Image 1 (cartoon, rainbow over the protein chains, first blue to last red):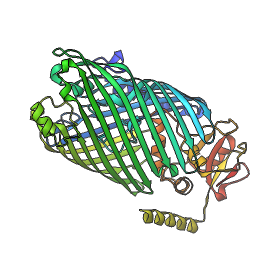
Image 2: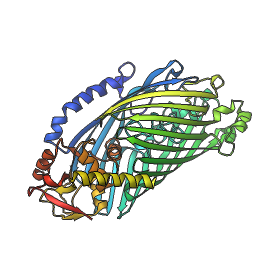
Image 3: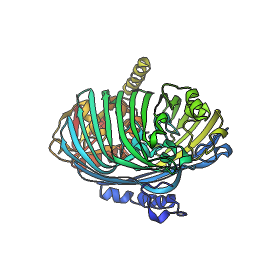
Image 4: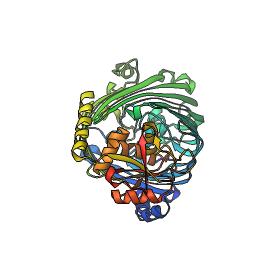
Length: 402
Length: 139
């Protein structure tokens, strides 16, 4: 399904996860190798989730209970010198109808730090790298680092994750560290892999559009940390243009400009996080027929985590997404398109519990009450009128990483 | 929240007073530094700083997350909980921009590895430290 980074050997029935499990077992054996050569490191993760919804399809046939949410990754890194690091990760991700577990090259990069001192570091990354976007994009598929079983959909859409996931190109980064302050700036330039999930989201699936990127994706992130990360603030941006061809309309272009503001406060057992996203969509061409679709998508979430004791943490999150920031209840878009208003927004509360019995193993369980369906995939829910407005989501996740 | 944090720190200090084992930053004797700023210690243990000012690669050694000494080192010297430190490592390991520290199983092994590895840095409880490693002050 994903066109992106797909290896020819698993075109249909060779599940990517088998290859990753094989690489992982090789990686575990490589522990001895790491002892003899500390420059080489091998790490990986394996995650399996169970998803049950009262209505609607999310990560598989969730109304009947779905195990169709599985992530496996294995990576290797080699430090040639303090200035030069090469690394690559293979990822297999199974997510309902959205991703079929095909093996992808998640990143493959060379990082050269041409300037380093006690206070400053500046370097260049070349290859396929994960985009610095918001607080979590770079490791969004790694259960051990993300803030819940699912990424907050208000910022990190799963139905269009490839939009900002990674870039093939260059990244320039620079860092200034003071006694209490740390500034980190990363600038990106490259090609973004586009897949069917993106096509089905930005252009009505009935039009069967094919999208191709025009030019480069550019943008970056400015991150500020105070007192070793007690306060973290970030501003992220990614700009890209997509050329669209459909069977019915004249050709056109979709311009995207994606902004995220992030803030986090860490204090002992507490962590409070807030992120806000705005994404103006501009439809050009198409004989003027899609001009009315111009909109500014927005969303935000607030999350509190509290470490109860060494191994246990509770989490509470509220998130809201709107297709049109000026008409957040969706009625205006509903009137214009004939689609139900629930299609144009989501509001959800999530309560979660995390248990980390060892450094490697984590178990999460979460319950969400949801109003609206904006983050549901068109691939998983082809009939917008058949979805339910109010629905509940229960999920359980087990993840092992090394 | 501040009160909770202060209470946690106070409780930790009390534990220390009872146990009487202070945690000390140590390095291989070839490391020229006699003291490091707290922000530099944080840069080193969060694996962002990869070489000493003289160009020698830094090798970071840590105990397991659940070891009492590691927990005291994290909270008292770095000012973060062990799970927060692990997440910071994971963010780098799984995005390809950094490597993990080297893991040791005991204080005895920590002493052995740090004393035999040029550029090595780690930590030990005070009574474990001998002349094979250099004690480093945190400013």
